[in-house]
Structures are given as C-alpha cells and as structure tokens.
Length: 410
Ligand SMILES: Cc1cc2nc3c(=O)[nH]c(=O)nc-3n(C[C@H](O)[C@H](O)[C@H](O)COP(=O)(O)OP(=O)(O)OC[C@H]3O[C@@H](n4cnc5c(N)ncnc54)[C@H](O)[C@@H]3O)c2cc1C
Image (cartoon, rainbow, N blue to C red; front, side):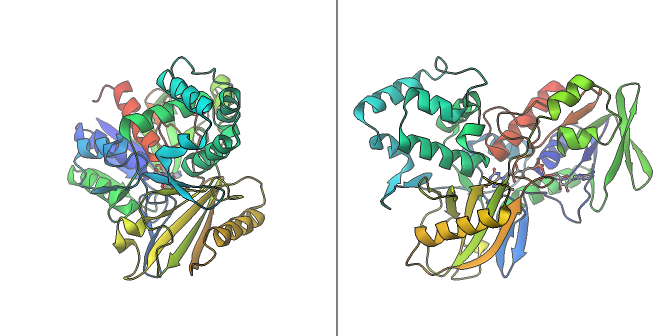
C-alpha cells in the first residue's frame, strides 16, 4: 500500500512515521526547501529561533505527542518544565499556577473545586464560550483575565472565542497529562527525528515539491500531481487543512464546503528576546494576565542552554492578535514587555506575526471537524484536524491518532 502525504509539517511527518511503521510505502511532498513546517528551528544570530512554535510541548514527556514519538521510535528528549507555570499578579508578585485558586474568595474556591471535580456535569453546550462559562459560574475579574491569558498563550485566542466544552476537555487533559516541556534542541529535534524514522523505513521526503492537484476519480483519491508528474497512491493524506486541501481538487460537496468555510485560523505575534541575565529564571510559562496584549512568556534556555549562544538567554513572548492592525499589536506587545521587566536589559531579536496561510492554528481550537473529507481515501491531519482537548501539537498528535484508528492502524 502506498501513501502520499502533502506537507512535511509535524502532522504530515507524524503520519508518515506511523504509516511507514505499519508497512506503507510513504512519499512526503513539501513545497518549502525545508521540512518541519511551523515546528522547526530558525537559526538567527547564533540563537535557535523557530518558524512558529515557542519550543514547547504542552504536556511535556507524558502527553499524546510524547507518547506517539515513543511509539514510532523517535529519539527525542523532552525536558519537563519546572515549575509548569507561574502567574504574574497585578502588583507584580509571582504565584505558582496551581495556587491561582487562593486568589479567589472562599465561596468561589469551593465552587471551583466542585465544578472541576464534576466537570462532566458542568460541561456546557458547544455554543457557550469559555468566557461566558467563567462569568456564569464565577464572575471574577482575576479568573476572566487568567482565562484570556491562558487561551491567548496556549491557543492564540481570547476566552470569548473558545467553546467552553473544548476548554473543559483541555483542563481535563492538564490534570491527566500534567504540564509542559521543551524538546532538547528545540522544535527541530522533533521533526528531524520523525524525518529520520520515515527515511529509515524506506520512505521518501521531497522538499521544493508543491502538490498542484489531488487526483480524484469517481469520488476516490488516486494520487497527486507534483511538478506536472502524476504520483499514484492508495491513500492521500493532507497536512494543509480542510480548506487548502479542498482547493486542490474539484470539491462539489456543498454541505462539506459550507462546514469548512467556518474554520477560522487563530492569529498571533511572537516576540523573541535575548538577554545576558535571566528575565524569568525557570523553564515554565510566565502567564501575564494583567498585560495589555502579551499573554505569556517563556525562557527556554533554562531548560536547554544550547538554544542560545553561550551566556545568553532566549526569551519568547506570545500574544493572540486582537485587532487586524499588526503594527499596533506589536507596539502594544513591546510596551507590555518593557513594563513587565522595567529594570532588566534585553535585546529584541525578531518579531514574527502569524496569520492566513501561516497561522498559529489552521483551525482555531474547538472548531476542528476531524480527519474525514468527502473523498474516499483522502484525509486531513495537522492543526487543521486536531483531536478534541488537545492544545496545539498535542491536538496534532491526537488527530493523527484518530486517523490511524479510522484506517485501522494502532
Ligand atoms: C507563534 C506560534 C507559536 C506556537 N507555539 C507552539 C508551542 O510552543 N507548542 C505547541 O505545541 N504548538 C505551538 N504552535 C503551534 C504549532 O506550531 C502547530 O500546531 C504545528 O506546527 C502545526 O503543524 P502542521 O503539520 O499542522 O502544519 P505545518 O507546520 O504548517 O505544515 C504544513 C506543511 O505543508 C506545506 N504545504 C502547504 N501547501 C503545500 C502543497 N500544496 N504541497 C506541498 N506542501 C505544502 C507547508 O509548507 C508546511 O510545511 C505555535 C504556532 C505558532 C505560529
């Protein structure tokens, strides 16, 4: 059996490694000159910046991605963050993420305990947002700000744009898998290891090879066209989302097209900083609920010093894009950083904005519609088809797992 994969991002490479391990002959086509998509390193002035991600694996060594990497035999060391995260309060004091309850009144603490313990009972309909859910049960300014900070950092969305049902699944997974980690060597360590697995099993990965068309005969995917050449396949897997994929063949299923046109990407801005002294001092997330735009910051060199030149730290701040004016969003983000670290010296290395065809998430969290397309043997993976309750790359791994079940591979 032969599988062709469109796109060598994390979703495409994970799928390729799983299929190659199951005996498929795998060919991956990537339009860019490099593999890894938005999860690979971008060397810059001796720092290991990235094409997208903040070098973090949301559930560290215990989560769905780590489990799948082990399953396929990818040799990746994940350095679990310690502490998982902290919160910077309005007065500048830092508290452990787990102590956020102590900021609430006693009545709200008791209510929170009950709601979390019986979260299934409190699970709302899909149409209530996480912000409205927090308002309904708690109506607490600190919790609302923390909800925005968490959703902005982890999903590049405001809490009002995340369905509460998805967020409760995410919270359940946080209790199940625990906190974050950094892959030693950065994002590339993950995607390079997967590339090696595919190649070691005889699979082929072609860069600078854009898939121009998907060949569909009588509703069944038969292969792809690359540089004018036809490549036949039994299975076509696309890592470019439902909408991008539907443009590569004549999709006539109106119901499907109507459904996927509502899949909106999440947009964000990443500001990479360098400093001689640590700004944060640990490898967990530094949530900033009282900043105007910045949702959180990490300092990955506390986990892996090799991500910066000797004696330097790499710090990355992330913010969901609130308005359409990228320039204003960046300026407010830079002012936030200056206010958060008034007496620290740092240099702004690079500012990256993510939207449209290179977003933070191809389908914003909670809007994913799964792997299936109207075409037989054509499936979607990646962050356009995340598994529910999966933050970013954890969602990508859960989505690939769902596809494997769909096609009978475990
Ligand atoms: C600023 C930012 C910070 C983030 N931080 C984190 C983080 O710290 N932790 C985390 O878990 N996640 C994070 N993410 C999300 C994470 O990067 C993505 O979820 C993940 O990389 C998506 O992988 P993918 O395979 O779905 O898509 P992609 O990486 O986009 O891969 C798709 C590939 O398909 C290729 N392609 C497109 N069209 C074609 C074609 N026609 N033919 C051939 N190839 C094609 C593209 O070039 C691309 O390489 C972050 C994202 C951003 C932008």
